[in-house]
Image 1 (cartoon, one colour):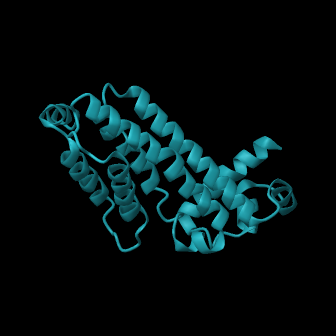
Image 2 (cartoon, rainbow, N blue to C red):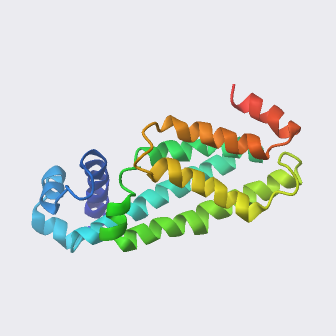
Length: 194
């Protein structure tokens, strides 16, 4: 049964990306998966539970990307540069996390917001503290406030329907990084962004 659930989640992610959460029906999920509707409902009693499972899988993927980037980085500046890979992942999903999801699937949206606050923000705060301690970021930065700004920039560019150019997020992240680094950090940044 677990293999079927995983397959349904994977297929549903693609359907949601291509057609949006609202327009995809359980019938379409069953058809795309090559399963009976009864089998789909045995795995997920309703669409809300399927949406929640999709969000939890996407959160897991995001955590893996963050962890991989953190482990691969030699220093906090490189880590912030590498974390742009997370945003490439989230850009592909940007139409999943919108007002519609908030209104119709509040538990799924709550899980995503908790990920941002209980995971992403903590990772960024740790990065900022390490960067300050290493002399790569400006001293005197208010770590929680600066991390909140980082999250706000990401939220604005990823989930604001009025933003048309997703490339703008990478420019905004570069501005963020340039605003917090010291001359030593700037030299590293130049190497990492060649």
